[in-house]
Image (cartoon, rainbow, N blue to C red):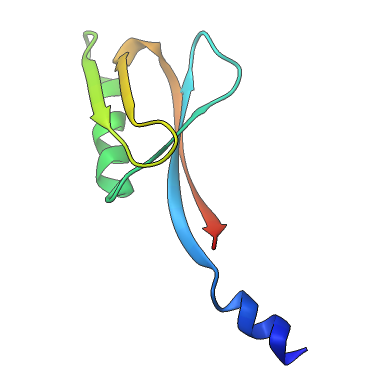
Length: 83
């Protein structure tokens, strides 16, 4: 039982940004070094009156995102555990 507890202490947490696009059902999940700052930047781009080109370098499976802000339907932050 003590061994199971020690394995759980090795679990790390990372924050993913879920970008919901108008033309897709599944969100695009992006990982950044500072996800909160990128999340706020994407929220501001969504609120802009005209379309804004968003070009971001990400960490993880998706390395680069290039979209127009009026194609974003919604955003979310989610903490995920990994080892």
